[in-house]
Length: 194
Image (cartoon, rainbow, N blue to C red; front, side):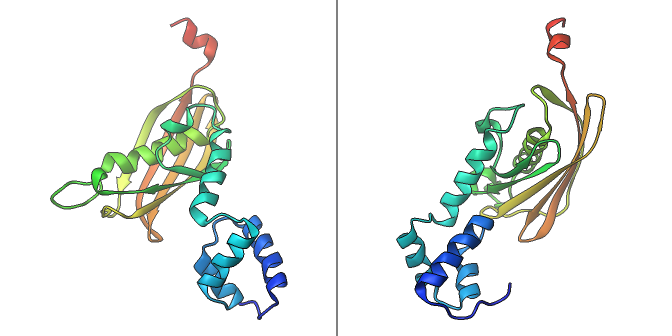
């Protein structure tokens, strides 16, 4: 990120508002570096301007994305859905904790990592009803409890009622999981005849 020269408080706040509007994922630390001021100065500016902290901004972005999902109820998605473009891709964040891990090793259980990836894959397809037909997964590195997981999904192909979705999951910017899913959409009329 390029460093911004010292500005007046008013100039800094106007630019701060614009930057956060463009990228709600900027942390106070990122902003303090950009403006060459202390983190406390950024926090005071945000408070004065009524801009919520990062966690609240993420929740707001996630809430807007949950409304777009057709195939599931928002609470069924594992992790926070922070970006979603139906039929193209999306991003979710999962904050892992001790309850998700084996007690002895404190390593996160695989089904939590898989569930985040599968629910994200399901969320990104533009369908009212769908099921996972096939999944090809690989756990690349172990994940310790307390690690933040960022999953990125991309719809790579759609053929008839089959949606091919790739999901990559990262921890500390290193890939820890990959999944290739074939999701099958169900025609409402077809389902009623079963």
